Image (cartoon, rainbow, N blue to C red; front, top):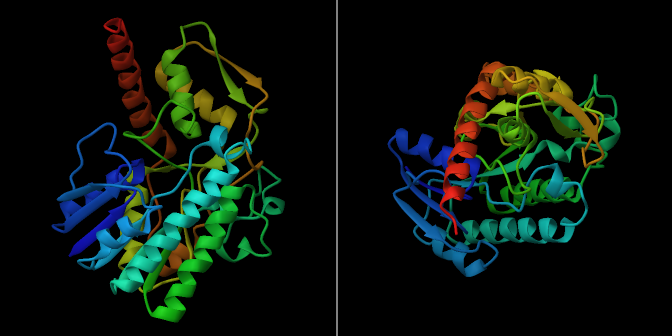
Length: 327
């Protein structure tokens, strides 16, 4: 198949390109930037701004059997929940989706995937860290926890509208905290697993690391390989409503930090400080994905965190070595 992946310079997009190439497809990647940590596997890779409708038209001009739209203005809690980036997040991501859908319509693309987010779920259902409610139909009445979540919910409806009015097949996945090697691990846009792995890797033995909030906020985290498996299974299915792709293994941020410290072999204390933290609890409800795809993630969180910590540890070591040679 001829497949287009937008956001192919990002974490999930880069891993997805590798998977699609391994299946023998012709893959075109597009993004503002090249992948940061590894050369792309794409047959073609176009650098450009998806906020520009002409670039989106160029990408879709030759047609595609499948489009995977993963490009978005996003980041971790330090980027999404401060409120300082709300206008950019909503404007940039909405514009990308509007442009890509219209380009797909004009050039008669057959099928398009949209990477939505667990952030669409209502704040009022996620106040109890031990019993969050995140099954797919619970998204309404709507009250997402951030402008990032509101944009994702708007874009879900946009994709469904194009399916109803123009016959484009759509697939929508609500992704729950995807992590793993080759992801952003510093700079402010990294997610909690990467940020904690970095803090532990850089900490001196017998010192401490800081976490935002009281540490009792709970989440589920999904390893990247399982995310890609879920996306490809969903794309090849006949189901077009939003589906959660995430783990059901819930953990508090404090216990996640303890897990990473244990993996490192260091003796570190944990200090809770003020900082953005999002909802109190969030857990993927996998009832629907089990019913529709006869599949759900299997890898234990510990295995994925071990792989991620070792990769980030190596990145911190490489960064320190490089800094020695800077003037």
